[in-house]
Image (cartoon, rainbow, N blue to C red; front, side, top):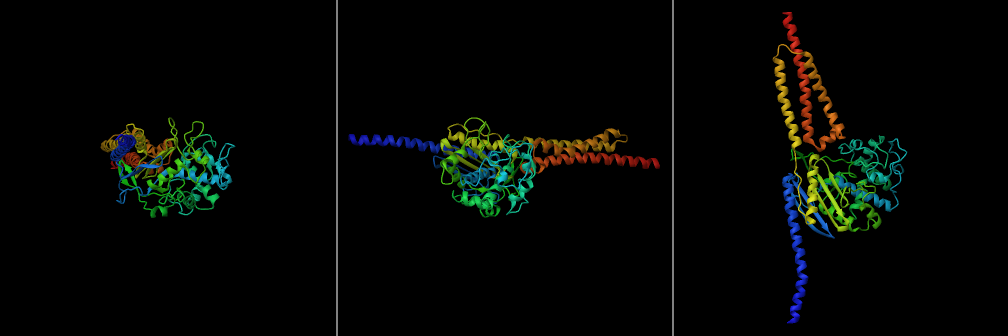
Length: 476
């Protein structure tokens, strides 16, 4: 009897922690599920997939909604992953470093001598500068050659780099951080040069295949074969099917496609290591940059608090986020099929909420605001009303102050002509890029310039008509 009681007591000791762990896991799963359902509803996101790994085990994996072709989202659904492509490119670079094909502190001229740039500095752009986003190439110059649709499918990277060649550096290489996808475009060209292979071939054979990422691609044809369809742009917060923009030169910096199942394998490698890299190289990829910088070798790091690698990604109609905390053996990936630049901050709160739940804290969602769009729409409509009344009054008046009205017409036309360049200059991006990532704002701004221009033209038309009528009356 005493032995039986002892065995039961021992069994209770073993089972109780197991039940506690199981209950905690169920609670965490339920919390994440409820949180994600709430977030997707509030943000009007049509489809998403999330996977979380902890200590080698996938503790959460689920998908919601549909893609633009009506198919349900699953862990094997293909998404454009945007700038999450950059950590994969940096992994390929580190692999070539280990093989002795690339030296991080070697000038890039060693590998792509045909690429030139203008600088007042005596310093050269080095491979490390490209990885750390400190090449000195401005974001504005980079945007001129990225997110383009007119590249050749086989030689797109070379074409884009040739267009960038001759660029004037804004800063001395290695001095200032300035996030720029063109840096990773150049890394793609370097990989092609030293491997003597297409970027897509090299990264598929040397990164995707060894990591068993069977549904991850770096070229358009393969992406279509894996089921890539257009995602959704956001107009006033509502999803509108995109046109499926794909840049054939963009795989190194933002146009790889993948699935949550595949990216979890990438995360597991980054957390646990493997045959691709030795421990020293892996630790270098995981390490934050020196001197308080916030971008390492292909990864962002938070400005304050715990310094862990993470990256977000966005194309015109897809959005992604990935993070890993090596000391906790924790990582996660979230893929969604809707994007707008003004919604980016709100989207960040989804992954932040996931981390909060895992840490036993209450998650919070940042409110999605489309007030900018509504305010701009209101301005356009009010301006139309004001202009209509103004033109009607001008047309009815027999005597007008020509100087005042001519000045108003000239000012209106000048504003119409200058508004778009002013917006582009102040934001540091081209008008084309503005439209790609904030299409509703571009449309409303175009309406505003059109209304202003039309106002000025109609003023001159009415003045001319009145002058002609006056001459006719005078002659008769």
